[in-house]
Image (cartoon, rainbow, N blue to C red; front, side):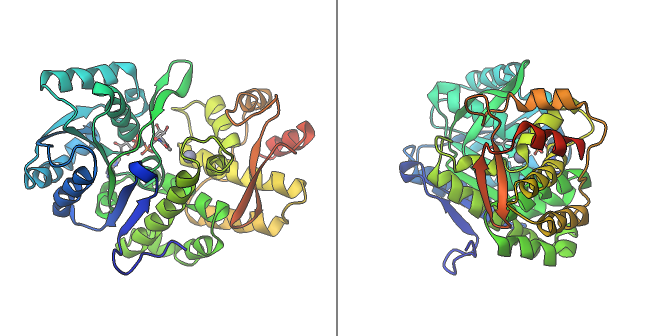
Length: 377
Ligand SMILES: NC(=O)c1ccc[n+]([C@@H]2O[C@H](COP(=O)([O-])OP(=O)(O)OC[C@H]3O[C@@H](n4cnc5c(N)ncnc54)[C@H](O)[C@@H]3O)[C@@H](O)[C@H]2O)c1
Ligand SMILES: [Zn+2]
C-alpha cells in the first residue's frame, strides 16, 4: 500500500486540500533541504517572499552541531537562518519557552514571511509548531524531525502544543506544516533507548493498519536495529504513509478514525500518569506495554486468539521493548483511565485489535475486564 511511487520514490503527500504537504524521506542529503524548503514555501501562500528563518532546536542537537548544515542549506536558497536553542526534554513544552521564542522572533523583526524550522524530537516539534501557529497568527513551518518517534509520529498530522501543570498537551492547536523533511542519517546519533521507544509506534502502525508492514518488521528486525538506511527508509515511509492516510481522513480527530492511532495508548497514558512522565518509562515503552495489555483485553472479548498477542510480544521483545509494568497502583491506573480523552458518557473507550492490520474503537470492555487486564501488567 505505501510503497514509494517510481516518479517520486522518497515522497509522500499528506492530502489535506489547500493544506496538503509533502513528506520527504532521505538518507544523508542535508544539502537538498534548501531546495525542499524553497519548493514547500513556493507552494504556499507565502510564494517566493521568504528571506529569513529561525531554526528551533534543543541543546543536545546543538552540541552535536546538527543545526549548522541545515542553516547552510537554507542560506543556499537565499534564506538567512538563525538558530534558537531550547533545553532538551519535556519541561521545554512550556509557556516560558514559548515566550522566549516569541521574544527572539520579535527582536529579529520576524513577520509572516519568516520561516520557522523545527529541528529536533517531538518536544521541539510540538513547541516550535505551537509558536508557529500563534506568532502573527501563523508562520510558515517546516518540520525536520530527528528522533524516530518524531519521524514516524509527531511531525506528521499537525498537532502542536505545550503542557500545562495540570496535564500534558493541554494547550495546543491543529497547525499543519508546509513540509516534513526526514533524514535517516540524523538517527545515527540518537540514543539507543530513544530509538527503541520510537519503534513501539512503528509496531503500532502494523497492528492498526497493515499486516504486511507488521511482517516486514518481523522479517527485518535485525537490519532495523542496526539502523540500516534502507530499512529505516522503509520503516519511516510506511509509518508516515499510514499516519498521513489517517490524518487526511480525520484531520481534527472529529470522527473515530484518528483515534485508532491510540492503540495501546489508553493504558500507556495511565501508566505514564501513575509512574510519572519523567518516570521509569519513555512514552514508547509505555505504548509497548499498553499494546500488549490492550491486545489481551481483545482476547478477553473473544476478538482475537492468544497467538496474535504472542506475535506482538515477540516483535516488541525483539526490539528490546518492555511488555510489562508490574507494581503500579491499580486504583490510580483506573482513575487515570477514567479521564482519557476518548471516553464518552462515562465509559472508557479502547482501540482494540480485530486482527493484525485492523483495530476498532470500542467501549465494550466491562470493569471486570479492565481490572483483570490491569492485574496482568
Ligand atoms: N504532535 C504529535 O502528534 C505528537 C505525537 C507523539 C508524541 N508527541 C510529543 O513528542 C514528545 C516526545 O518526542 P521525542 O520522543 O522525540 O522526545 P524529545 O524531543 O525529548 O527527544 C528525545 C531525546 O532525544 C534527543 N534527540 C533527538 N534527536 C536526536 C538525534 N538525532 N541525535 C541525538 N539526540 C537526539 C533529544 O535531545 C531528547 O533528549 C512528547 O512531548 C510528546 O507529547 C507529539
Ligand atoms: Zn504515542
